[in-house]
Image (cartoon, rainbow, N blue to C red):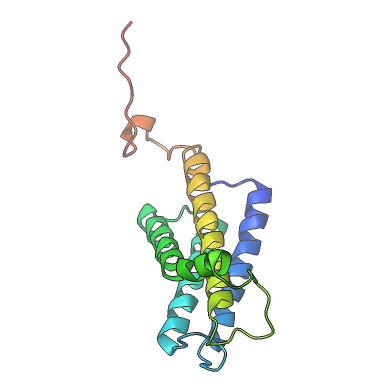
Length: 163
């Protein structure tokens, strides 16, 4: 996959950003701060953000991420959005005023943390969508290996010449 320089720069920044998101998940096991804090939840979020960073890392090595891995990333985003969406719903439509900023994310009121997690998963879904688009746009434009025609590549059929 031959990405233009601006896309390579953006993808490099995205690798660092999502790797940082993964790194910061280590503190999500404090039950006095987080709603239903658990080591398993922190590990799942760490793995989730690490997966997105790995997907972007593929593009830095001029390889398109496999479709199944992109689908797994998109599915993970949707699952996380489903798990945390109720907190955003309560934050927006509940009886208390909407907030994304709080002094602490208390276990008694998980709305803030769940809303932030929802938006983190939404950002990750947008990132996976961008990678899917890059794969379609720039992997398809890659030149064929020596000795191959477009019709010998999987999924590409050549139309018969009717002349």
